Length: 325
Image 1 (cartoon, rainbow, N blue to C red):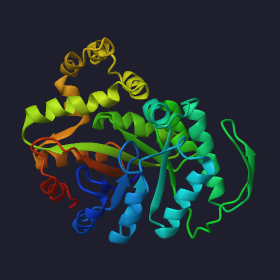
Image 2 (cartoon, helix red, strand yellow; image 1 turned 90 degrees about the vertical axis):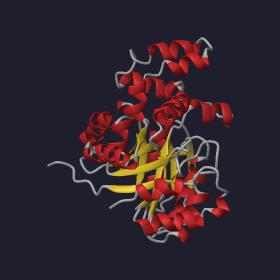
Image 3 (spheres, helix red, strand yellow; image 1 turned 45 degrees about the horizontal axis):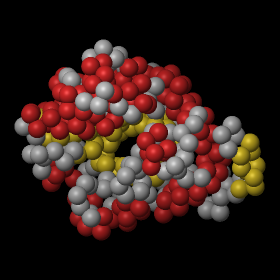
Image 4 (cartoon, rainbow, N blue to C red; image 1 turned 135 degrees about the vertical axis):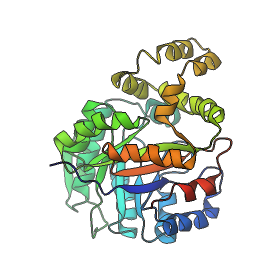
């Protein structure tokens, strides 16, 4: 039987350039416009939980998810406590998304060795799911050991656990031991392959895709700024390996070669326009909506839109134009 998708449309928060305390009206409008979900990220801006805690009160009907919390940057018990607190504040509305993150965030910015990412995520998924049951845990996992931890929050409903996944090993883990996968920086056509791997392990797995959107008819601005945004990811080892695995090794070879040689400007120009067109949704609002629909048609259950603050992009107009319905 084919997987039946609920086709949810969510938004990434907080919005860039707006103080967190001033985002209430924007969150309330998202709920009014029919967006179903709010998804946070955790890199160099706000942490992944504070915006969702605020939104849990500002938008009481919306589902809240982390995409993602790194498995390294909080200890296992603290991660379980943090997730449980939000699940307790918004029962039945919270989804815990965890992943390895990257060597840049984990090692360079947080001073934590980025070792055995697959094993660390696997062990963290197993631990938090056990912790949510309320049982006392004493366990030697491969990447950490727990001695006598019992979660003090008694959950009405344990949150689903989604795994941020790029290549096959983590995608299979997401389906086998998580409740689904969080994917990003891939094309609508890539989704068919990626979602298929997850659902080989679990036909009911949820697929959440962060989709980067720049609704502007200014193609040059979209391509130029898109190349800049993409380069920040394409040269992180885990994402480079991901796109090689997806089959972009040849089309991006010159970009990677010049980037490694230190020619940043030259490297940006070597990202082909059609790769920008594949990985960043841009154009008129109507063109963007049609492109997002392709992700959903190819196996995404929840589109977590991320509005890129490119020249010519009006946030308010974008939010209204991309709203469900």
